[in-house]
Image 1: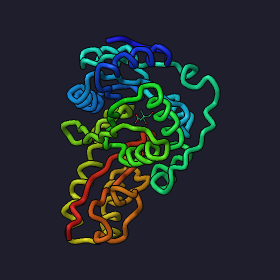
Image 2: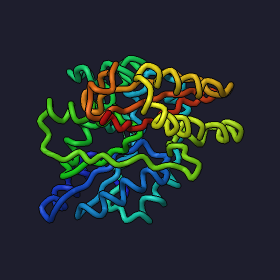
Image 3: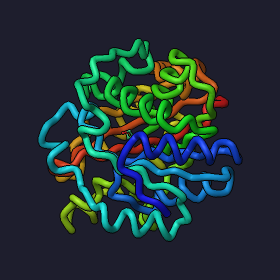
Length: 282
Ligand code: PAF
């Protein structure tokens, strides 16, 4: 595996790789775990060349302390990438990516206005900025994203449509710890006690599937929120049940053929997110 730190070198390497076959891109912010590895494995199976970017993108953080405390583990990351059979690890500096401020404002539309978009102003514009830059540098055949950030995938699809990128967005299922907690780079910031409680988030989402069979959308939202909040260490920021394509909240199960429940929970000062798909054929 080669570690690449400049855009010029990345473009040169990928120009010759592209001439030989397909390129799979896995964008990450590092602090890699098995969830990332599952994306990389899929990219490895489906492409001739695999490039993984590791870049903690400052423009998508609306909270400076979240940016400051985001885990950075480059040495462990590169060891992991190398044994996962990655061809190129692109690990640029902030100055390399943003030699001057990126003032682009993307028209991301309604998919970006709710949930994370409402709670974290500017977050999705920052995601669109960095992902569009990565797509310009790499021109991948396919790019891989995890469904834990369910809304992010919808926003990236919208950015791809408005910018006219010719590539396939591949969404990959959430990878979980054996106790159900969704894998996340932020999990390392949980104390032992918080880590023991955090799986209650997924357990509650799972139990809401059968609850939803005989209850309305609003009752199901209340059930999930109250159950999670019954743990003193957990505080739901939002629980929203949305259409899987438009990200718009639904009031009735009949309004959609695929409803997804998206939750954000504070466990101390660690913000965890998760989601679950409801079978809405009622
Ligand atoms: O999901 C992430 O880790 C980030 O939002 C991404 C897509 C790598 C952009 O910085």
